Image (cartoon, rainbow, N blue to C red):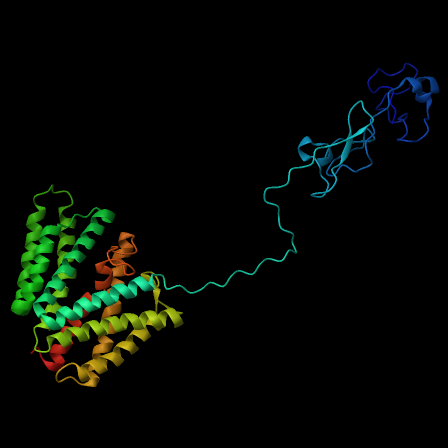
Length: 398
């Protein structure tokens, strides 16, 4: 519309200025009316810029002045191009020029929202994973089995050396993780020497020799730690005595089994039952496992897996006692298999508790696909005294 006051003072003859409610000029395209719009004065006024007849989205209406307030997205510089995305931008007139000008198109959003009804691709089905490199695990297991069988049935003394080496490596892994994660400095030298001596003493002198070696190893740990500052002495020697009992002393029962006339077959029965128990738990639990056995300790273990371990171990135990052990009976194998499954599971959970306390997944990386030596000894160590005791009760120590 035309307004005599836009850009110049109002005419003396007019009754009201631009904002007068009574004599406001007509809207765009209407004939002038009122005394403020006589023909001579209308010819000297400047035309108002043409604003397109588009409602200001979000703008407020100024009822007192009778005109639309310049507000809302159409009149904000940061909201160029409020037309639909990819459409024609709004065209606004420049001040002092009747030619409409186009605002620059808005930049495309970096992450445009998907259309509400746009179909979403279905997620790919998750394939159940075993969690380890099975190829490497099987290869390492077969290699270790070949070494054990060769040393076990060729020269018993060589197998005792294999046990001693496994004990020393296991002690090194355990003490290293204790120092790294907890700052506990269990002395490795007396533990390694005493642990190897414990295994040899058990094989040569029987249970008495194993107990004496255990006592001397604990004493050596106490004395060795005295050469360092007293801070942390109690926790260091406590961890050292625990390590001596947990690794070499329990492993000594394997050497005690070896002293019998059919010692090689007793050790083989012990190893086979433990491996079968672990394999049965793994296979059944991975395929059918639904109910967690001890979720706070080892979330991967299930009750179905435990049933698989018991079933597999009892069947193989009956076969081993019937055909491998002198004087054994199949029903004894059922009891032996059940006991092995229970002790192997408890041993696995026990080391899981240790690893959770230390905040680690594996004790080491020496064996690809398995972790460390201690990750393979976890179920063997507590099972060794159980098998030794039951075999002594069933068929004697001889």
